[in-house]
Structures are given as C-alpha cells and as structure tokens.
Length: 191
Image (tube, rainbow, N blue to C red; front, top):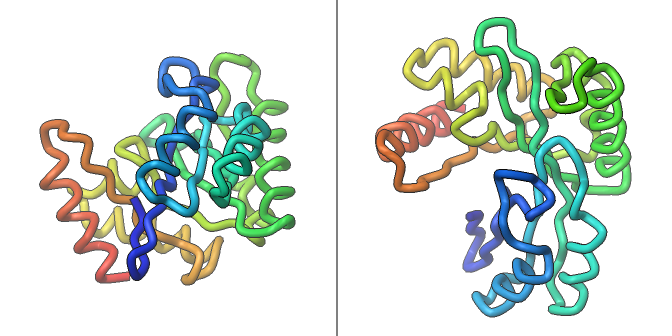
C-alpha cells in the first residue's frame, strides 16, 4: 500500500489472470478499492498485461485511476529468477512495458517459463516507475547481504533514475516478514 498525505493505493496486485497467484476479477478489485476509499489502484499481473483492459474499464465504472503495471520475471545469474514490479507512468512507460513483456515472451524458449534478461531493460525505462519487487525480488532476496542488496538497488537507480525507484515493502504475515521489511526500510533510508 502506498501512502502520500492521506492517499492510498495498492501498487502490487494480481488479478485472476495471473494463474495461481491472483484470485479476484478486475471488477471485484475495483469495487473493493472504491469501497475502501482508494482513488487509484495498480494491477501488476505476472509477465503480462492480461487483465489490464478489463481492469481499466472496471476502474472507470468506480471512478478510480487505473495504474497499469506488470510483475516481470528476470533471469539472474545466482538467484535463477527474480521479480521486478514495473508501473507505467505515461504513454511512453506503457509502450516500454509492452516492449519488455514482448521481449520476455519472444526470447523465452518455454512459454510456461517466461523470463527477461536484465540487459533488455536498458533503453526501455522511460516513463516507468519501478518497485524493487516482492519477496521474490532481487533486493529482497539479498537483504541479508546488505552490500549486495544495496548494489542491486543501485543498479535499478542507475537504470530508472533516483526518482523512479521505490523499495517495495510487503508484510503478508509470513514468517520472517517483519525482519525482512525492517531491513528493506533501512535500505530505503540509505538510498
């Protein structure tokens, strides 16, 4: 959840189109957000914009500002796969999301195992806000190695710009969340 002077918006949310990760239809999510007093909501389906159109239509019906995003899987030399949450801030950002998703699918030999090489992010970051990712994100996975986590976050800042990178904090009541979120908050303060 993102707070800015009384403004709340969920920025990492999967619809039922993210199989085995989300259960709600875009209409249900928009209705719930409106009833909670949100003014905006982001959908970040996994490796695609699967529910984006239905989501935008649902948000319009409830007078919510839709934010289009994606949770993109990246290949990682040591961690195998990492997640990165990308949000379109503009038309250019939306176009860049589409290009990145297309490249991920085009260059993945197995359609059930889509992942993008991180080098593909270069030159495709304009108009995109990046969250460091969920528990499966590189920064989060490296948080017990502070220098490596800081270096990973620094690479994102280099790619997307300081004002477009946010450390993602998720507390899902899973063992270790409190400690992990605390360390991520410390890292964010350092950045």
